[in-house]
Amino acid sequence: MGLKDSFQELATSRPLFLTVYTTVIVGIVVSSFYVFSAVYSADNSSPDSTPWLDSRLSSISDEEFHQVSNSSPLPKALDVPTSSSQPSKSIWEVPPRNTKMPPLKTFRLTKELVQQRAKDNVIIVTFGNFAFMDFILTWVKHLTDLGVYNILVGAMDTKLLEALYWKGLPVFDMESHMSTVDVGWGSPTFHKMGREKVLLIDSVLPFGVELLMCDTDMVWLKNPLPYLARYPEADILTSSDQVTPTVIDDSLDIWQQVGAAYNIGIFHWRPTESAKKLAREWKEMLLADDKIWDQSGFNDIVHRQLGPSVDDDSGLVYAFDGYLKLGVLPASIFCSGHTYFVQAMYQQLRLEPYAVHTTFQYAGTEGKRHRLREGMVFYDPPQYYDAPGGFLSFKPSIPKSLLFEGEHNIQSHFTLINYQMKQIRTAFSIASILNRTLVMPPLWCRLDRLWFPHPGVLEGSLTRQPFICPLDHVFEINMMLKELSEDEFGPGIGFREYSFLDNPSVPKLVQDSWLNVQLCQVGTKNCQLSNGTNSKGVLRLPRHSNEEKLKMVFSNFKDVKVIQFSSMQDAFSGFTDKAKEDKFRNRMKRYVGIWCCTTGHVPGHIYYDMYWDEKPDWKPIPPQTAQDDHPPW
Image (cartoon, rainbow, N blue to C red; front, side, top):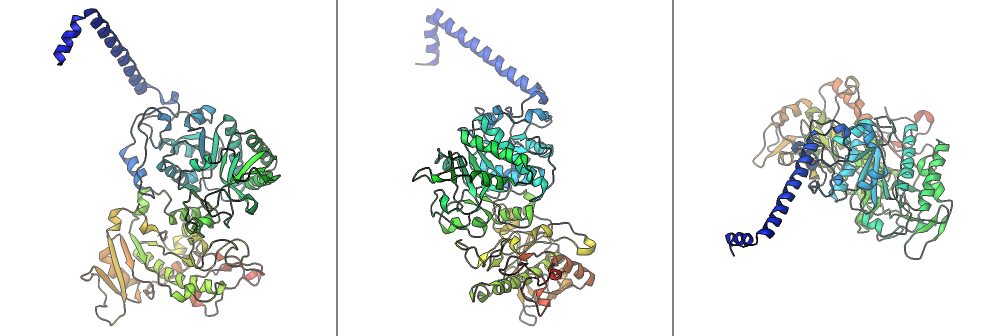
């Protein structure tokens, strides 16, 4: 039947037709009224009167989208929800341009705010100050890449709150009035931050939601919510500092075998009476004594009673008051800085890690950031991957004997490190001369580094010898990044993590702009100073080239993004400018730290020395007197 026939048929039944027609027209008019009213209201509403989680149906700007999606350490598209059915869940949806920020009072933590953002009655929370903004962006980015949006971020200062708001992140004001700078581990302000965490937990649990509380110096590698849901009877599931495996699968660690502290950087709370009671007592303990470390206080309270097991299968244990049911997350997949970066426990057990927390590391916050970059799991802006002046890299040369022959002891460890250190020193020299950023090589160690005496590796751990150790085991990353006086230390030298050139975030224009440099012996065929390449696009460089020769040879390659040396052995003979060399040496001496710690001697640490080879009697021994206990400069 045609359309014309249909209308004719309807017309023959005039009363019915008029009724239907009138109903449709009225519906259209009413709907139009509401649509236009909503549009007009949205366009003319005052930002000061708009809740911070209102639905803003503007798309993320091209510039913001490019920065967020292309700077991810993993090649995943940014998942920005576009459905208006749950607009409050959107993350990375930036507020419209030319609007004012809502007043501070609209960012208060409320039950309504938490329930708005929760999913399946679970909320995931982290917090920090402005100094940790890049960690927070990394934390959020990993979760949203995993399709997890039930997130809230607590801002301890208004500078962070404003910055996160304008990036489209769900943020609330902790009213902490915290400093915006890095407070440093163990400082009074650090302990204040710990108390803020406890106050936050105590505030959220009465809202009736499950709380996954996280430090900002950790990242999620796999959605943890299905795992946590496997243990519905648990009041608290906590991570730990355990470094020896108690299980070889993904079940909870065996609580009787966990001898290390419970780590409060990752733990999940259910709003049970026992959990709320523990949170109240923990808060009261810390407020009564500002000398107590929040993690120590938690461990003391939980261990008031530990045992028996809740049942034969779950791995849960009665703790605290005898009613609270506690589970210890497996250290193999809810990783510490040791089980992930040193042992790679999850790899050896053929498991998929859920998280990594940058504990067991050195060099402060800079060391944490570098660890995550080494693991290619840190969020950096695009300019990080395309440094001005380009990059310098090299293939390290290490004899097999230094890695595998003989005992793994202090002497063999330092012999191995010193051999690599000399090459790195040469590379820093050339990078400084060519004004390039040095891509560090992987650093091989025979011995672990800890802050207490140990036999080389922790007994019972899965640490293999030798192993690629984090850069902060040997180098003072915080000093390498510190702005030192150029008058005394010469210009700063940029550097990147050893995995940098394998990172998918490195743009194609960098990957495709490459020069290979092969060292050759003067007097051999085709080994002469030249700033041109051979037919294979390889530049042959005579060994023992000095500063002026390097400048001359590479003057035509300033636009090349990556210059890679086949080796650093005898690549550089020295600076021609004595004053410049002195400043460089002053800088290099401060780049290395200590190894720790020998048994049976106090102090037990041994200083690394960047210029060890200039001291014929140098030996890896700890300081013999208090006067000797200083770096080699």
